[in-house]
Amino acid sequence: MKGVYPVALWLTICVGLAAPRCARAQPLTARLHDTGYVRLAEWARWQGLGWRWLKRDESFLLTNRTTRLQFTVDSREARVNGLQVWLLYPLAARAGDWYVSQLDVEATLHPLLSPGLSPPGKRLKTICLDPGHGGKDPGNRLPGRQEKDYTLRLAFELRDQLKQAGFKVLLTRTSDNFVERSDRPDFARRANADLFVSLHFNAAESGRGEARGSEVYCLTPAGAASTNARGEGVQTGAFPGNRTNGKNLLLAYQIQKALLRGLQSDDRGVRRARFEVLREATMPAVLIEAGFLSHPEEGKKIFTAEYRRQMARAITEGIQNYKQAVER
Image 1 (cartoon, one colour):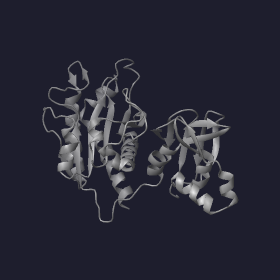
Image 2: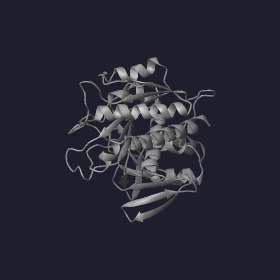
Image 3: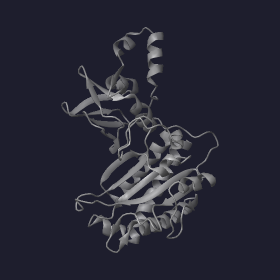
Image 4: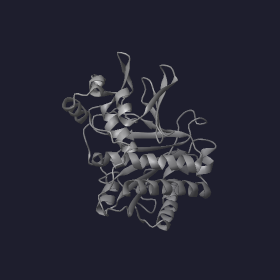
């Protein structure tokens, strides 16, 4: 599939080539929600994608032989080849046309449709696993259960499976001790890790019988609001972790896809956040919420070694698929 060209380059091409196709594409951009937007129909044609409504004026598909993109009108919800991926800005309407944010073209769609390759000879060898919480920080708690215990157990199982797959694996903690959040990605940096994977489990304060499934977070690009914003401003600047935005997203996507396939869990999507462990990571990094401790069925499964083995197998598969995508 052709790569997604930045809007400035597209306009340069149109100016330089007075072709009817380019003339019909104008105006390609618009200013909406205080950010730049691209006309979706023109971008889709540039990508060789056909358009059809699923429900008139509510949701539609862009498809070709290898790609299926589903969008919801006036929403950040989208699906990329069946997997939920939250957009940075909602799809917007103007004068009868639908627009997608330029930032989503560059930082959401492009990394998934045209993954960037690692430099020649660069191989993914060392993975840093970060069992969330620990020590005085228990994480989510249920009667007789603490998140910190199960993130560590999952990390041990995942370490063993990744080693069997040929990777070198490091852990930010190997016992019930407290590690500052800022020290976790710094440990990975000092160890020259190629990936940073933080392991967590969710819990719901209300609706415990409803909230279930996995979600994987990567760092929010500068200038966009997080899916899990926690009161942050949209104009939050860049962090060290933003240097690997494209690979962060691709890694999150591959792991979430493998978790859904391996666990048959509910798809809560690939999401964005500015968690400290993601902000300060200098290598591709994700934070996995592998399921809900609070759900009466899913929680019971998480407490079993066999289900955690399935989780570890799925995460390993996602990492291997990521490695294959960037090393081709």
